[in-house]
Amino acid sequence: MLLVVVALFVLGPERLPAAAQWVGRSVRQVKSFATGAQERLNAELGPELAELRKPLADLPLAELRRLRNPRAAVVEFLFADHIPATPPGDAASSPSAPPAPPSSAGSRAGVGLAPGERPPTDPDAT
Image (cartoon, rainbow, N blue to C red; front, side, top):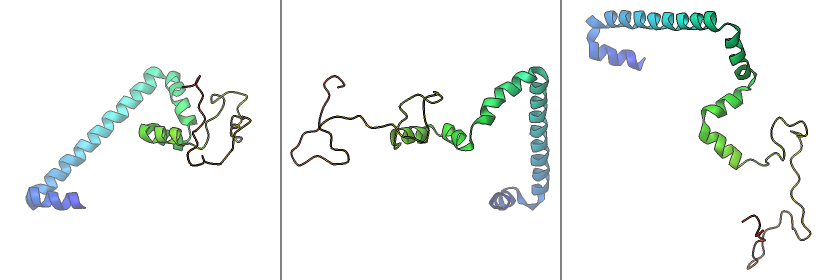
């Protein structure tokens, strides 16, 4: 609606119908080019095109949205509650059970450090 009002002021009432016709013809021409390109791809690639589309069709919509926004994917990965112990798609992985935290004899799960206490370090990992 705002574009129509701006176009009315810029073009004037005399040239607005001609501009609308030109825009309509241009949109129809672009649609016909896109349809022709899609038909050409279907004709030339045939079953190969269907094989290329299948993995994308199997992805859930949320996964596709996350792939469109890499920043959101990185933030989700960094701040996720748990990271699977096995790679995705591994037969041994269980999506419903989070991995168990590493056990150590002196660990205090869920308790912060006392004032002045130094955090435990692993010299092999750092």
